[in-house]
Image (cartoon, rainbow, N blue to C red; front, side, top):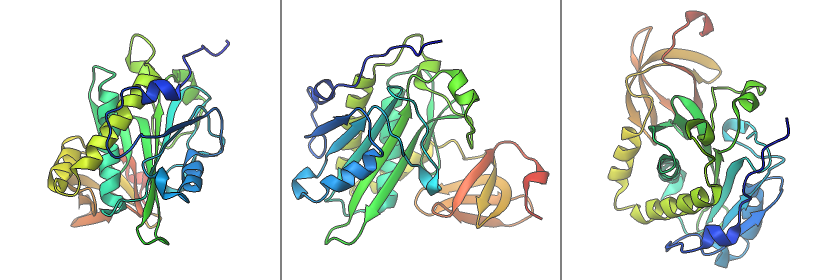
Length: 276
C-alpha cells in the first residue's frame, strides 16, 4: 500500500505569529539531513544564531539517548533541534523544561493524558510518542546546548510492529480521528519551549514539581539497568536532576542516577530478567 500523503512542514507557517522572546526568530527547514543536531552545531559558530530552530522532514542518522538511533520515515514526524548559546543553568534543568514543553505541545493535540517517562521520553497510554536529547559543548566561555526533539506524528501501527524497539511506541495520529497538523504542532512546540526557558531559574522549584506531576514512574514497579546490571523495585520518589529513588525488592532504598540508568520495564516484574 502506498504511503499516505500529508501536508509538508513549512517554515513560514511555523514562524507565523510566533510570540517568542528567546527562540524561534529564525527557523530552518531541511527536506533531508543526517542530523538536525549536527546542523545546529554548525550554526553555533555565529553567536547571532542563538535560539535557532532547525527542522527536517527526514534524518538519515538521527540519534537518541545512550547512543540509540531515532527511527522515522520521511514526512511522518516532528524533528527539531534548538540551539542555545546563552544558557547558564545546566543540561539537567534544560532537559526538564524540554520534556514539559514537548508533553504540553502534544497534549494540545489529543484528548488523553500525556506523561513523562524519566528522564526524557514522552508517553501516551504508556507508549513512547516522543524523545529528547540534550547535547552540550563546554569549550566556550558560556556552555552551548542543542536540544533535539523527535515526535511521532503520522506513523501507523505496522511501522512500529516491524521495528525492533526498546519499549512500546505510538504516534499522535493513533490517538486522533484525523491527522495532526504538524505545522501547528511545531509552532506550539516552539512557543512552549520559549515559555519554559523564560521561567528559569527563578521558578526552578515549580518546574521540578511540574515534572513530577507529569511523571509516569511514581508508585510503579520498575526494572532498571544500571552499570550493566538490572535492579527491580518500586519508585517512591523522583529527583528529576539526581535520579529515581527506588525501594528495592531485595531490600534497601537506592537512588539511580539519570546519566547511567535506563528503565527496562515498568509495572511488570519478572525475576528471570535480573542479574544474579
